[in-house]
Length: 156
Image (cartoon, rainbow, N blue to C red; front, side):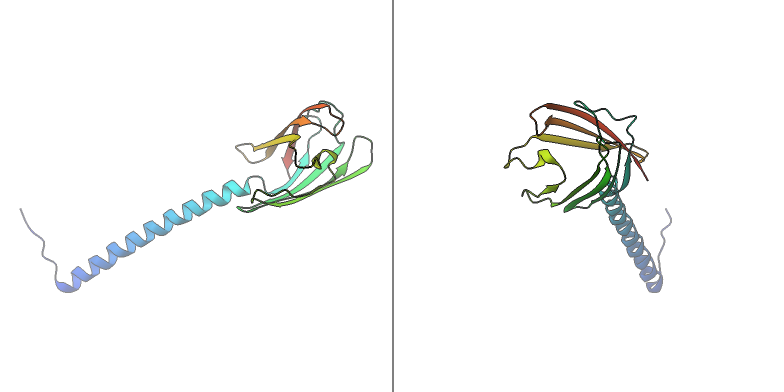
């Protein structure tokens, strides 16, 4: 078996190369984790336009048009939506909350102010290609009627 004996200067060079390789590997791993986190937050963020033809409202009818601008980060969820209601009147919805367990006002949504009682559960998912956002609303509206809506949006 042949042994390799590095000279002192060469040994130092090998140590630097090992250190740089380890540092680069660590930085790539950190960047990958950061990108995955940013991607998860960013899935819902953006401008979304309602697709009334693919949406189902029970009870109906739903809005004629609606465009939502959503900002979702690790500690904040902000929605600003404008459109035309089923009655043809302009509608505006605002919601700006932190993920801290506190209640925040939802402007423009009649069933949202219920003295702390949960009346609606909204679940949203973004398609794997990131172009379609589907929200399911289940609960009770301001008139006490059961709600089971599926609302489909497309990224703008």
